Image (cartoon, rainbow, N blue to C red; front, side):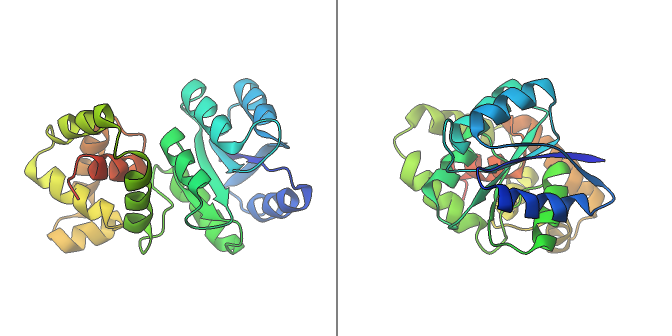
Length: 219
């Protein structure tokens, strides 16, 4: 069972999301919060598997809350909700540790799929927008972060040639089955490589793999 928490200052939106997610046999909405501070405090007592987080909220915004949750309860993954696909605040949330983001007007089935993807360690950036969004983020906020870039280069340097190849395909937004087809590998082999990449880069998920790849100049 995937335990999900909802954080948004709009009760009607929360109710709709809770209804959509709660209708699934493998998803349970365990708690809801009106703002980031309440979310951080509640998650400290009852850590959810997935925290669906709004960005703009009173008291504590979604970026600060995401950073606190990812730091203090790393077993919880954060899925950020945003209004615009190039929302700078949502992109900052990725840096804070979020496992991806979803537009607020996404259909219910897309939200449900996103929760399942994040729960399994996948990213929820759509393939068509992954590279554009992450590159926009890196160019806008990390170009001057020389220490981070150096660390990224060193981490990428630990990858094998095949792992670098798979990392580039992940950065293009390809899924494991698509990578397997592209490289004529079995999906099991690809999953093994992805686990190794995550470990070597110290990444929580595929989103952080992509960010590290861009910072290191691999893609």
